[in-house]
Image (tube, rainbow, N blue to C red; front, side, top):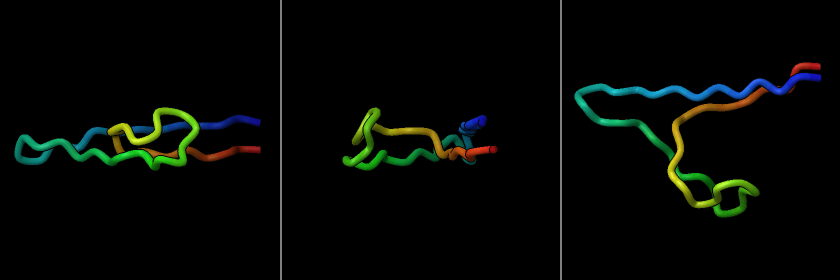
Length: 42
């Protein structure tokens, strides 16, 4: 099994696109993060 995690930075007009992590997240809850996601490949 593999878990692939991907993040990307979008910089249109000199502004960063970020998201705030959920307070329920186990890792870095409430922190700003680059937009991304993960997929479980079995």
